[in-house]
Image 1 (cartoon, rainbow, N blue to C red):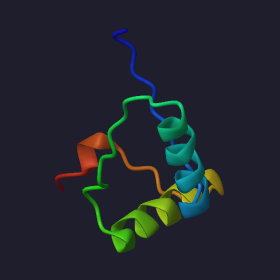
Image 2 (tube, rainbow, N blue to C red):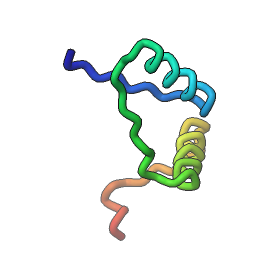
Image 3 (cartoon, one colour):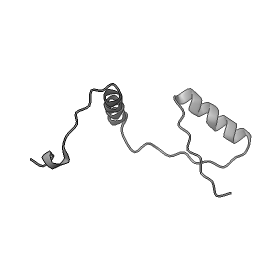
Length: 66
């Protein structure tokens, strides 16, 4: 079957359960390493949280290069 499912476990425990489930059913899967550091991911999460909380700054595209 040519389908792809992307799952984002919330923590290591959920990841372990998911892997155990797939292995138990002898399903083929691959793990990919996150290419970004934990520090970078934490910064990006803070940025997303700030935007959702209305703490973002709007800029005019014409002013970016000034």
